[in-house]
Image 1 (cartoon, one colour):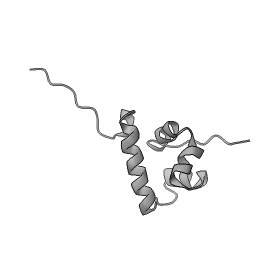
Image 2 (cartoon, rainbow, N blue to C red):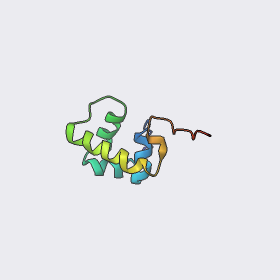
Image 3 (spheres, rainbow, N blue to C red):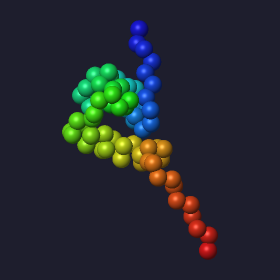
Length: 78
């Protein structure tokens, strides 16, 4: 039986877009436990994995605005 894993943002959204924590771990070529440790700050993301993380955030941010930390600018009425 598989345990349900909870991840903080933006890891949670990335996992949802990838099809689950296991699938996201496969994209990084690491175990789900390593991914969990990264997401919860228990270990540092390595250089190549950090580049992959940044790429995935950009790729999925197009679909989900919640991955960006900056608020969406409001249109100014003239």
